[in-house]
Amino acid sequence: MNESQFGMIGLGVMGANLALNVEDHGFSVAVWNREADRVKSFIAENSGKKFTGTTELTDFVRAIARPRPIMMMIKAGAPVDEMLDKLVPLLDEGDVVIDGGNSWFKDTQTRNARLANTKLHFVGSGVSGGEEGARYGPSLMPGGTAESWEHIRPIFEAIAAKSDSGPCVTYCGTDGAGHYVKMVHNGIEYGDMQLIAEAYDLLRRGLGCSADELASIFDEWNKGPLQSFLIEITAKIFRVRDSETNAPLVDKILDKAGQKGTGKWTAQVALDLTIPIPTIAAAIDARVLSSMKDERVRASSMLNASAPARPENRDQFIKDVHDALYAAKICSYAQGMALIQAGSREWKWDIDMREIARIWKAGCIIRAKFLDSIMRAYERDKTLPNLLLDEAFRADITSSQQAWRRCVAYAQTNGIPTPAFSGSLAYFDSYRTANLPQNLTQAQRDLFGAHTYQRNDKGADAPFIHTDWE
Image (cartoon, rainbow, N blue to C red; front, side, top):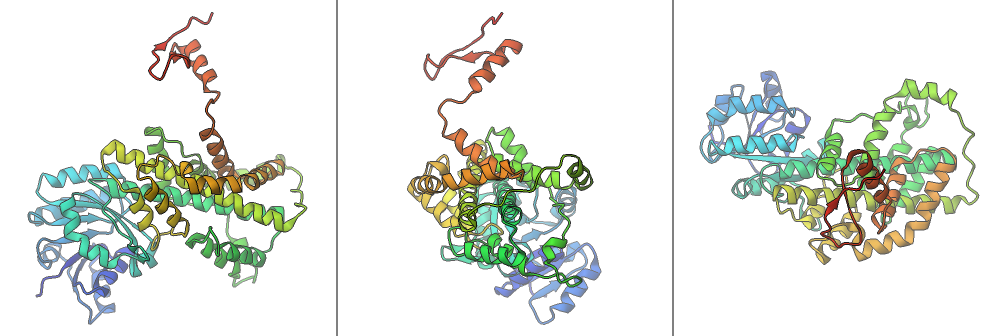
């Protein structure tokens, strides 16, 4: 038996498609799956290709040339640890185990330390792009030792999506850096999707736009600064008809959005690192609130309001929504990128922010023209603390600001919920305010809990003091 150059554990949709992608690029692949029948069917479906199917884990390991690069595409959590318990005793020094699932980055840090003691390498890699990306080119976000990255680099660069800036993969940093970046990527994705949903709602309820009209509007938006995969597929969705009723299919879909937990992780870490992410948090809350369908239906008959007033100028309103969406998107990405920087500082990953924007340009769900602007921002200032401070984004926000405010005001006046639009605007206004009202908050905390405060007229290093407020 010729030794394979790569191993894949898990032949679900993502694992199978990644294995096919690796083989497409000239690498021989050994495959293993918990259910032996799946291995047999996969090999039968791909006869003539450079696959070696094994039903025993020992045979799988033996089939791969050392140092073995072995990727796991299995359910995150306990299954990963259970797999490692079985796999690690079979491996040799220098072998590389890659977890390509959506694992919690702190679990990845723990696993990295565990395998370091065995002289094995562990890589936690974000994989974005869904099943299509896995098959034809995902965005890859690996984290681990620099040595482990060099072992897998030729294969990862070959299978990654390609943009005009090169393969959409970069070394993110040690231990959990890759899964951390993927987690924040998913949080940004939540924000993007919620902002688009709110734009849709404003056009649908405000202007009464039909699905066909919405498709045309989003098609037009996809030619400018909002050009992205998500805007593109949104236009496509509006054009699909229900096979049963011939009505727009989107109108037949229950308004309960699911989530798999990476958004929640993003919010938790942001709180731990004291990084405000109101747009992303609003997107998570919106999905949770959407799941309360029965309660919302009941409330709609008890807390009813008048129908939204129709905007006087249709074309101006469409332009306002476009500009508001773009401005809010800038704020959402500013929050996400700041969170990546905070994680990089906390865990000493030294993440290259320009590279992160670069590898998201193709293959992943949030791929967008907008990322070129983010790349240029970090080229101008590698340590830029917030995208809002970049000269180009400042200009974009300035030109979009009034339209953004008109949209939020219209939504609030007419009872259309826009938590992400509004959260982004509040973030922008708070970030640019030199003196916030939290001086009062701190006074209250000192009065009821003796939590102390600093005076604002005693310099940056003013001591913390307590006042007897009675």
